Image (cartoon, rainbow, N blue to C red; front, top):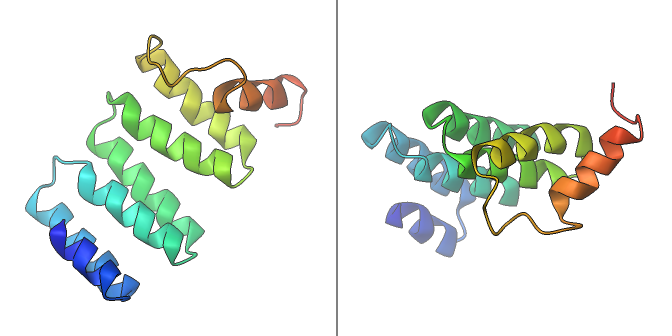
Length: 120
């Protein structure tokens, strides 16, 4: 993961993405490389690649609420509230006592959007 940071510091996001992918092969049970790759792809403006990296983190650790929260929060940042609700709600289901669930927070906003009938 240090190599990813070095490449980012050097201003080479493509090399940082490649380093994150290599890290994932070295530690396939860790979510950190996928989450780091998602961040790199976000910086590169590659929305779909970032979503895929977040989804890979979920596939790696589907019982981990942090993976679901990361994807849901990313989708929330893109104003994709329908998908954000699905993933944030899954994170909530896995860890309802988390401090991240604040009244009026992303989950509540996305839920209100869904409840208004704006999602198909």
